[in-house]
Length: 260
Length: 93
Image 1: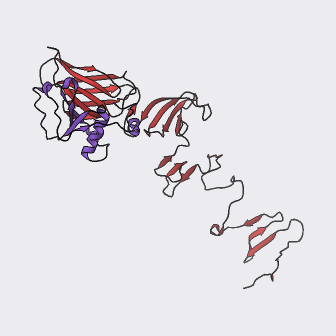
Image 2: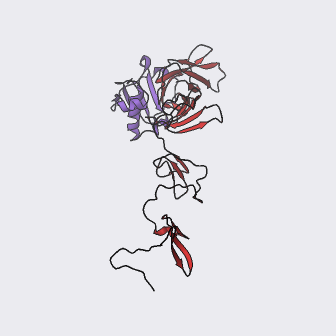
């Protein structure tokens, strides 16, 4: 084996003359060179030997890295693709196939699904409050800057499974005197007297101007119907009234409530 | 279990907890009923917790039922501010 080495001093290889390169050959074939301008060229580079940071270079000539069609102005990690091929936005470790972590607790923290024209669309936002809900809202103008957006809330789904909107039932139940067959957003029913009960809400209504739709039935051939009284934010009184004598009777009753 | 207390016109009322709401609470069954009493009864209401085995099916004289204090009578208390917010309640009953 032959070695070119210095003895405790710099080793200089000098290609004399203008525009002359320093060339490295193996078995008579050039494998690498350093041009007169300082450009290093090699037939291959063992990437496992590389350390340190890449310099600020253009990636325009990179191939095989799937960057076509992607542009970025980020100066910090915005998207992470895990070893399991799951993708996270903002989050550092994907916890689902698509993991989106909100930047902030405003409408722009989440997803904007924009119409194909007209600068309008829908926001989906995980609201970070006591209800930890998922909010859906319509944005009539998507040209406004982040922080200046105006979004109309149309549906909130709370973490305890309630839907808050003008078109989702706030509460419902199927009961008969001291038996609750099934219910939603009802903490308890209070059997007050014959044909008379209070439905106590798990989560109170915002006001008492809500709508109660109720019906009752029995195996009897009498004429009767539910009667709604005392709508309060925390409860509503429901009575089952006989048409024949205006007296009350125990009847299996169904009701559903819409409102704020 | 259910809760009985003196209701309107001194007729005994029976408060029946909703099973789905009970499932959201922690603690023993009695602790869950006490929480519901604090939530759904006005503060200071005297009540008792009764077993589901108590037969309330004969309602012939329902409007004549009266509440009589027993040995384990309890009194409903205020909810915490945290619970009031949780239930969207502005104040205790």
